Length: 455
Ligand SMILES: Nc1ncnc2c1ncn2[C@@H]1O[C@H](COP(=O)(O)OP(=O)(O)OP(=O)(O)O)[C@@H](O)[C@H]1O
Image (tube, rainbow, N blue to C red; front, side, top):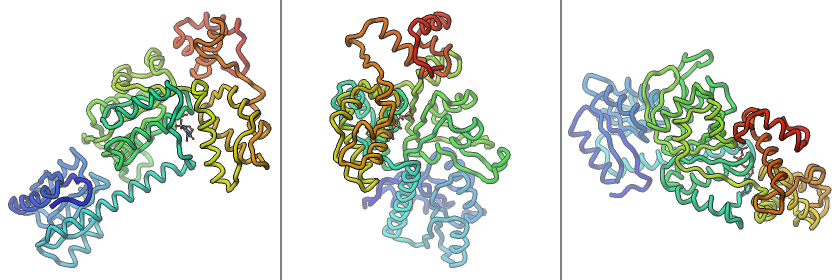
């Protein structure tokens, strides 16, 4: 008998050994993984140690009552589906169990077909829940169909490496300037992994205070801190079986770094206010737009955590170093904004294309996306002209400076210094990245007279 859905991780809770074995045999013949528990204590211990998709719970557990265990099970494992099993198929106990949060009810004796129907329904509900979570993730803004094809060898190497590690569970660190598409690549990695049917969950490390971020990541129990009025599961739990994406991981507050290290290293964590060790089955992908080495050198990022995250590191190239891809990405974005606005703009004028090609795109693909969106809105004709593009494309033409290009060492150094300063949080840190002391940096800046607006 084969299962019709993905293999489940199942828990069978019954005090009678013979009944556990019968159910186990039936479930294993459908290729599911089964763990047994003979009483409440064993069941609770099991759900704390690992994640189960579904538990079969007998209403009669020797001297204990399955109905008393049900709320505790659900409290310990937020999204567990609990199916009540009983020989006393009283309507009242079924109603009571469903009221307390059971997923379904199986009266004994049941057939393999009835088991299969319950599992199919559970898979359907879980699949819908994952889809809702994925859609909620996108509510922040509709996403264009991202084009991962590239004409640039450097980008192709990144994509090749990314797709090679995608099916493994290796931790990946994505580096690259802001807006280069690290988020997009993280999703593509997940989509090509064996976890693709499980959730992809993003944690924005800089967006919350340390206290809220800890609860966002790991969850909390009621009363763990002011405002924690009820138990809450965290994103590690929500990502179980899937991928946890830690965006801007360099901004993770120091107090949380040992906790993240434990998660990355041992896949263990605790909810805030609950000293119970939980196990997480997540693949970790982290992203940073700052050189983490500088954060480590400045004592703001733990070195051991850095090494744990930096197992496979991939640097997404800036848009200015992907010139050959620029117009094809722009055309893909144009098609997207046409659909969104109901317009039918056919392309860019030759002059607009020349301006786009010459511009340095410090905000990378995000800036290009905004420029194309603006162009589609502003043009009344069939094409986007220079006048429809944002002003900075023409007023601040940055020099095109490529290593190995026709550029003096002095100009190259000045441009490198300008960019490091622009991405570092302070001049001291920029000096550290550059490997010079702050006074030398100050002198060099003065000499090269960088544009105003930099820190
Ligand atoms: N290849 C692409 N095709 C179309 N759009 C893209 C592509 N790559 C990135 N984008 C778009 O560019 C924007 C920025 O991408 P993304 O958020 O992945 O960058 P990021 O490197 O993670 O940025 P940050 O470091 O600021 O978080 C998004 O709106 C994304 O949809």
